[in-house]
Length: 114
Image (tube, rainbow, N blue to C red; front, side, top):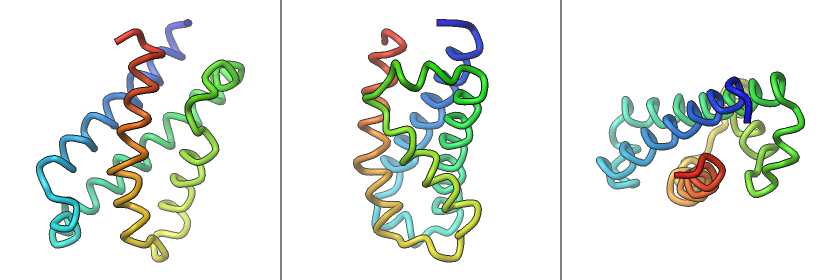
């Protein structure tokens, strides 16, 4: 794994860890009672998508070598947060935080050998 690819994967992992910490600090329902926490969650998910885009630009073949990661879903979610920010349903954000991020952490840990 080249240095740039590893850097993008480590960045994704760091954002996932932050999202997990945020989710653990706030019960998911309470997350939406705290606008700052909600915005933080959106930013972390958006940044994970940005890392995926940068990985694709710098190392396009690596995505093919990591089929366990739902790349298109990650990038699509990033685009939705950026371009359709007024149409983000709370249940989608909850699903990403409760299911998508933990699954992504497992996949990234496996790839990064952690």
